[in-house]
Length: 147
Image (cartoon, rainbow, N blue to C red):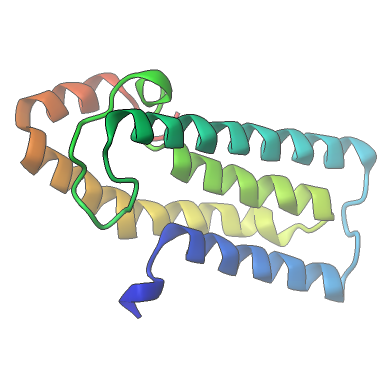
């Protein structure tokens, strides 16, 4: 099971449930404005992921959730949010739900947020505190966890 305990797996599972809704009740919310807004959320999510991935590459630090990072990244997108990829995961869920006309994604978004925080973020923050001490505490005090 631990091989499947990664944020993208949780996101894909939630998206699978949303997609299943579209098969049972197609286009529940099919307004063009809602779909355009959903597309915008997906675009923002993809930009967040790209910016965060670039930051990890530049810092030569791990992007894998269960590992301790080699460097504390606190610039770029990480100066605005400590968890841009997790934020992007939730935005992808909501955005694709709106694109597909499904309401279940709006219900699953807080569930995914809770899973990400309790299964990944809290443990990551503990590893970062242990590895970077006062530097991590300073970063945590100036930068919000989500937005």
